[in-house]
Amino acid sequence: MASRHLSRSIAMQSLYEWDFSGKKEDGLDKIVEKNIREYGPGLEDTTFVWQLIKGVRDRLSKIDKIIEKAAPEWPIDQITIVDRNVLRMGLYELLYANKEEVPPKVAINEAIELAKTFGGESSGKFINGVLGTVYKEIEEKK
Image 1 (cartoon, helix red, strand yellow):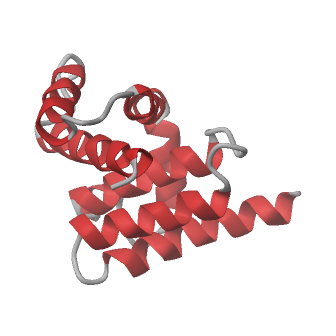
Image 2: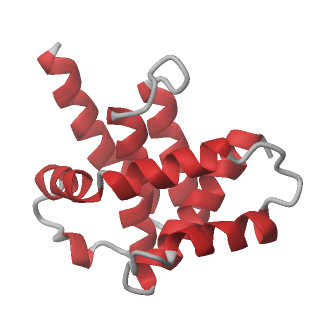
């Protein structure tokens, strides 16, 4: 497994656990450290994991508002925890990450793959629909 994909998996699992346990402010760093030890023992550089975690955490309310706008029929608390956190990571990469490191289509594709791996039967389509909607809006504003 490529290190960036593994980093995304660890970040997603950490955000899931943090969200599931009530998003306690001091708990996320401990969860990430535990998950890096457990799921990424061969991961030499954890910078990307921490970049994703910090990026999502620092922009959580903005990202959640974007999700609510892009998927108005799905209140944020009714989206499954996996899908919600895959969307958060995907939107962080799509909107705020370095586009040269992670082109928009790569960010969307990676989020879809995470959704297929960790989510339910229709997770990939849901993630694709929401991120696709946001991407189209970005392109129209250019």
